Image 1 (spheres, protein in one colour):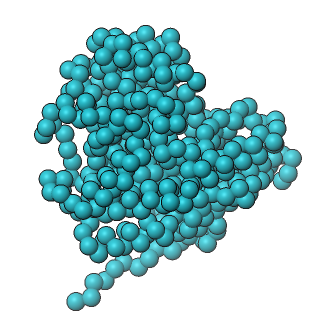
Image 2 (tube, protein in one colour):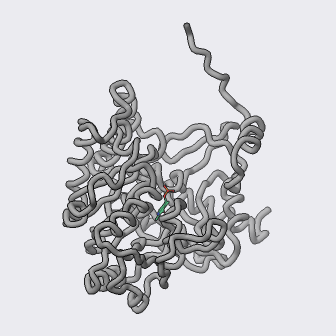
Length: 402
Ligand SMILES: *Cc1c(COP(=O)(O)O)cnc(C)c1O
């Protein structure tokens, strides 16, 4: 009666061949098969080691295979993995109890889903249902996801044009410009905005911008939706809303929330939650006990191990080390905590490839920006090593070393 499992795939050429033949070719692939991780270290199928400054696009916030999260997953997998929200569940309630101690003032209710785009989708639907209005204001360069609603508020045409026509009632305005908030009118359901634009190139909101956004929404009875899918847990605070002292009506959260297991959360005020018409939204997997157990372990560890304070210190150290380079290829360095962007004067793709060869993994954010999203367990020594490997990759690009 023993079940026969397929043999493990161990070499990059087989793995590459299968993925290239069987997948919809949507992604520009990086030619490495990552097969194992521990903390801020990843290994490929050849056993080569990498320092991880991408955390799987910010998802692995505590690093890979964190013992507390792994233990919670194993325990819950042996108990109950799935439970629809039409039933109560102990793990879901436990996570909510912990989470609500850390939400910004006024944010008292949660909707569970499974990804960032879903958390945004729910936010947009709720804003429409609650206000009875259709018009949405969003920002240029914004990234909110790839399903039809979140795509309509995403700012970059390259993601949208193949799927036009989009949901029509959206006005895109310049990010960070208080004057552009005049686009919010008495017909507007909501303004959706990232407190730091992530995919768009690590652009933190200028001082006063989010307060101006709150005031403009209040003046017209529109809701303020903060998309914290990328910023939550990463900038030295659980929520950027708390750090910036802004009171959104709705917050979209996902990436880091369960250390890499798929979870999305749409958080909101009592006033919004009590006006969402019952039965008008839902899903199958949201708030399942497995991801809730992982999310509880993730948030408990972040708080218990003092990782917010520490990540802020390490982030400041990382940025200072980058600034000290005073490198002629660097145009600008931006960020908060461990969400760091380095704008280059040249295209980033070849630099990212040389970084990968040198054993350092980071991300692009647009064509000119290298994005570092290391896990919160990153040390100052890790940051120094990352900066040193990054410098090597930059230098080799200039032909100073070969
Ligand atoms: C990644 C991201 C999303 C989309 O999340 P997915 O889980 O990829 O759907 C939405 N908003 C922001 C700010 C993001 O960074």
